[in-house]
Every structure is written in C-alpha cells, then in structure tokens.
Length: 365
Image (cartoon, rainbow, N blue to C red; front, side, top):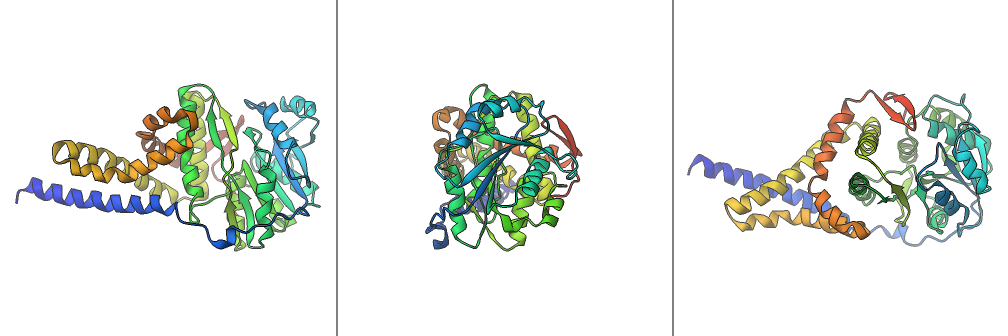
C-alpha cells in the first residue's frame, strides 16, 4: 500500500472522528429540558426593578426605552442610569418620562455599565428581582413576565434571553448577525449557558452589600453574575424571546465589537481560547476537506458535511429575511471566530463606549 493511500485512510479516519463529534454537539441542542423547567407559575408578587444603563444615543433608543415602559407584567419599576445629566440619552429618557439617576463614580473601579448597575443595587434595595436591560435592545411586551416567571422555582438564581442582531444597514451588520449565533448555540446547552447582560434577571438574595462592592470593581456584569449564580449552586434559565438589537455596523465597528466580546469571554473563561480555536478550526477543516475529497476521490465524502448542513439549517431559521446572506457568511464565520480568539488573546485593554479598560479587572466573586 502506497504512502499516499495510507495518508488518505488516516486522514479520513480523522475526518470521521471530527464528524461524529460535531454531529453529537449539533444533536445535543435538541435535548429536551428537564421537567423542572416546564411548569413555572407566574408569581405576580415579585417586586421587580428593571435597570437600564444608558450612555449616548443608540440606533433606536427611543423605541427601545418605549418597549421597556409598556410591559405586560405590572409589578415592576423602570430606572435608567446615566453618567451625567449632559449625556445625550437624558433628553430621550425625559421625553419618555422615565425615572433616572446619576451613576456613582466612587462606587468602584469597574466598567461604566457595572458601576451604573451597582449604583442602582445599592440605592434601591426593596425589590425581589432585578433585571438588567441594555439600551440598544428592543424588547417584546412580555419580556419582564418571561424573565420573572421562572423564579417561582427556588432553584433558579437568574434568567436570561439572547437577542437577534437585526441588520438595518451594511454588509458587516449582517456578519454580526451570523457571528452572534454562537451565543444562541451556547444558550442551548446546560454546560455552556451564560447570562447575557443585555437581558438578565437575578434574585436580590445573590447581592449582599459586600457582593455589590466586589461587583462594582468588575469589568463584565454578565460574566460576574453567571459565576455568582453557579457559586451559589443555583440554576441559570434561558428563555428564547424575539428581542432584537438594531445594528448598522461598518467593518471597523464590527471588528472592535467582536474582538471586545471575545476578549471579555476569555477574561472570564481563559480555557475557551483553546476550546474555541480547536472547535472552529476543525469545522472549517471538515468543510473544505469533505468538498475537496469528494471531487478528487469519491462523492461519499459529502456525507461528512451533515454537521455543517445542520448548522446551516439553524442559521437559516434564525436569519428571518436575511437567509441568502446567512448561507454565504456561514461558510467563513468560523475563520472570523478564530481570528477574534487570536486577536483577543493578546489584547491588554478594550475600548467600550468611549472608555479604555485594562484587561485585568475582577470578574468573579
């Protein structure tokens, strides 16, 4: 047997192993949730505070704040937090007649968003549930209700949802849409689920005065709260809802955003670098190897494309009217993920809403 044939056999075995692993991961997302998560009963007695940190005017800020005002769940208050009264967002907040406070600059050394949340937590303590809402998100009318409902189960420490990044202009905003589907995939697994800080509810009992002080020095609210829930041996529950972030990203905006998101993830979960590089690289390896070998040797290699096809189907379903774009972008999105990981691994600071932050700040309890 020639060396070439031995190489092809061994390479095929490698591809089959990758195929089986990726197929198992794809099929695991269809696993049914435990019965625990199916019989929630809404407890309307939960007094809830929705905290919306604002800085600058997002693409659809007026629409976003309006969506927060008119929620089906009635036992809640809405509070915006700004850095100062000169922030352009204040005008929109006042037009919507929403209460707002000024963030305490001396509360900690964390990110602006974290300090805004910590300010609200330290001043408003007579609530059962707190919800973080990003100002760039448009929320559905039953959003608060769906986040509060699972707390009828005492094992639930926090609830979250994840948005559709709605591209309203430009090619790179569509890349951002597909890029974000990695987050959707992580939400579908009990192992990789995380609390997304744009739509994240948690129990008051998680935050003592000491925890608030510690939290105020953190860089990422969602990573901190995710770890806090797990350290208290509570569950994080994900609820799929049609909330959206309207985006009109240029390449520069997308590139800065995707690298920042990746850097924050690595700061909280360093092992994700190795896992991510391997996972996304083998997907591209399987894709291009299967196509090339099907042309050069036998069409049977196309069977190995099944995990990729399942991924494409999920992407198409999530993309609404942008299905053609998503099919094209899905071919190279894993390459972007790997580049993001390599870039983020070497980042010493990030720029976030006009401020620079060193990549060394506390993220966990």
